Length: 206
Image (cartoon, rainbow, N blue to C red; front, side):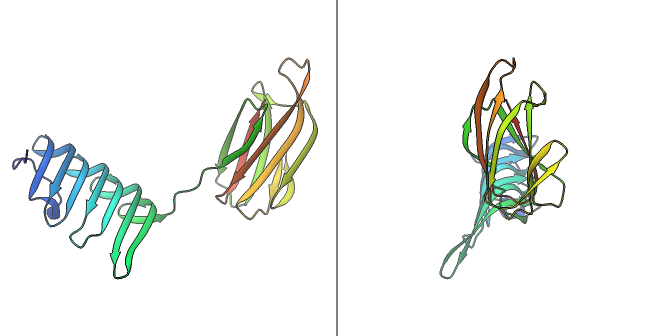
């Protein structure tokens, strides 16, 4: 039911409110109507969490909100003369920050216990690979064959990889390694794609 005593602190929405209330303010799931309309989560009278805001001219934002502002992942659809214009990505304080980064993708994984991708704060376009086993550097690597779609081979300490990369890049690692008990060898393959430019470290655990 509409709650006249439950206030929405956005003037363009503060005519009718239907939903949950706390201390006289819209809080939780609800719908608000005024010049514009909003359906989604509220906190302390403001859009907060996931919600859809529709302006009087038909423009619409579907995504995350924080304290009444577009913040997080969301899609803004703008009504223009010859159709819709879509702006999709990340937002902060109502400002568009750019597209959501594409996470690294594993193409093939054979005899790999686990792996991780970490983007460092460096300025280089580089991918370094660390081989680990039992929480330490894996010293039992044999017949290592590496290939990359872009870049130049490089080493840094015990890490090996490629630098001067133009992303996206696909890297394939093929090698033999001893098992954890150092009793026998087995073949391991790890192939992956990284789309977002940056200085990356990839850890491969056997």
